[in-house]
Amino acid sequence: MRWLALVLVVPLVACESRVIVSRPPSSQTTTPSASAAPSPSPTASPSPTKAALRSLPSFSPATRLVSYERVSDIPVAPTLRFLLTDDSRVVTEDSPGYLVERRLTPSGAAAMVLQAIETGLFEREAQYARELLPGRTLPARGVTWLVLIVANGPRDVRVSFEPTGQPDDELFQPSAARDKLTALARGYEDLSWVPASHWAEVGSRAYQPAFHRLFVLTQPNVVPASAAPDADAIWPFLATIDGVGAPMGGTSWRCAVLVDDDARALAQAAVFPGYGAGSARASTSLARGNGSVELQISPLLPHEPATCAGAPPPL
Image (cartoon, rainbow, N blue to C red):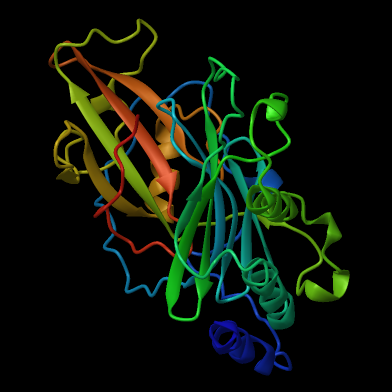
């Protein structure tokens, strides 16, 4: 299957001589520094001017080359730790919930992909669980899985595994495959080993998404917290808060895709603790119905299409 790796790597290396230029700034893609990320006011605006939601411009998502995320058997959302797309952009988690981005050179991106393919573990989808040694008892604790997805030729190959290097490793069978995969994931999580010549940019900056998903949950029979702001008062759009977006099948959530300017307008009007380059959630009251409205806003990643289709509802 080595020829599949060459199908991917040759185009990347062949364009090494070209200059990587960031996309020109626009109302959707202007990139602020991490320190310029929007900081919500400690109190919500009493009566923002209502505006129409902007139409979504045409958009072609990037192609994922490598991604790495952590998942758990407890009900929490998966956390992205590393993403590399075919425009040589790397998106990583700088601190919990806060994403940053930086660009590699084409040869740097090719090296990242080859590092995974050369393990020999991405020829087909696989799952590597820990196996107890005879006579040992499974610890009573949650399980963390790491998931790596690698583009090998025309296929996205998904490999999930329980990492090695945990305090109770002596209870389980050794696994060369899990050792290799764990080392690969750790390399993607800490990029200090990457040569400076492989980077097209000097440093990282706050990830600036072109689009965000807005999730809305109206709960007419749930009493809001006493300090929750009134949803209708802070809502900055002409479309009603409980009518925006489309229902998500099997849940009471609704979902809409917002351009970055509209997401920022909402963040400034509502109280979104920690809103910046990651997901944020806020609770509001529904004074006209004595209920509550939950709002969650999440950035779309470069390889994701600007749609709610297939998006998991908030937990």
